[in-house]
Length: 316
Image 1 (cartoon, rainbow, N blue to C red):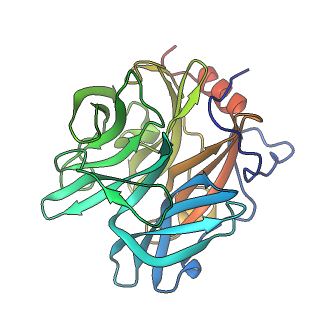
Image 2 (image 1 turned 30 degrees about the vertical axis):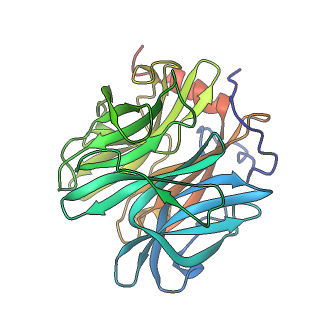
């Protein structure tokens, strides 16, 4: 049995796997859990991050407003399904990720500059006041995802270097920092390999620590005659040298099949950005952007997903 290393989340949102369902990840039957109706002035709310906070949950949410500006706002929930979002914009940019490191909640996001996108990093202790640090990379990059603890006394960040367009440079890399200011020791992690992800891959939620590695959900993009299709895959990275991929599923775990994933501002998108993982039960709740329009929720267990990765291991 696989074991999650981390905190217990006894109030993790959960729905049992439907009877007879054979795949390792299943959708919440109340999807989508967040729509534009959650906040006045929103055109769409998607690709958002969630963490346990207090006796409930907090999050940072991507809100594209009715001017189509990219903004980030804070939200709170008791059950991680029903959310109250604040109107105050904390940063400009998109696709946030969140993790707690040594008592601080660190936010990484795609920060907008006149010269291209960088990875912004900021932290808070109360989700009210934020301290913004130096950007983690020179333009242009996306999909900046911090590991939830130091490894060998260094902070680690997954990134996807790219250009100012939307598609080129499709590989995941990893960067090291002693102080969250100076980043280096860049390491290659993985490239697109299979058809479903052949255009590009990018890290998704904060990696989940296991006894023998890191569980990394990621998105892969297919370019078809009808445009891009974003789906979710998974891999297991080495515990101490996480640029080394130990296992990697050769197929997606979740792809746009439901109406709210196939129809929206950007059709055919499943884009994972957050995952809650309960160390006691092994339950995992995954938040993903659906069609660049809403936030949806899916479930798995650590045993199901690890077994699936190893059964369909690309590296065997």
